[in-house]
Image (cartoon, rainbow, N blue to C red; front, top):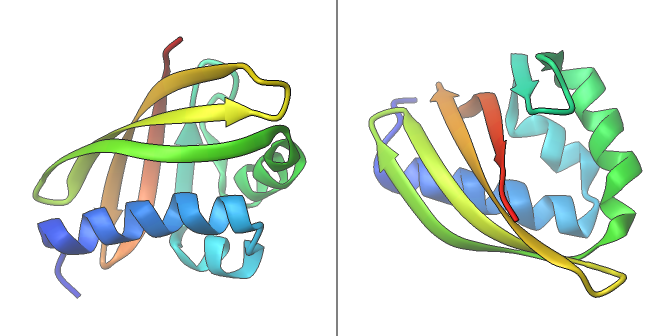
Length: 112
C-alpha cells in the first residue's frame, strides 16, 4: 500500500487515539516489525520496548490532542498537546516515517 497524505494523517491520529484507549493490540499493529522510536529519554528503542514504555506511561495522561500534522510523502511532523492527570500540560513535536501503511519510526522533540 502506498502512503498518501490522508493515510499518514489517519494513521497518526489513530496512533494517539488507541494510545489513550490503551488498545495495545491495535497500537502494535500500527507499527512496522522493524519500528524504531527515539526521544531524549529513549535512544532508538524497538517496537517491543516502545510498547512496554507506552503501557507503563499511559496511565499518567488525561488526554492527548493532535493540534497539527504537516505531511509530505511518507513523512510527517505532528504537534500535540498532552494533559496529565495531575493538571500539568505540555506540547511535543514528533516526526513520523511511514512505510507500506505502517509507522516505521518516530523521533520525539520535547516541548513545554
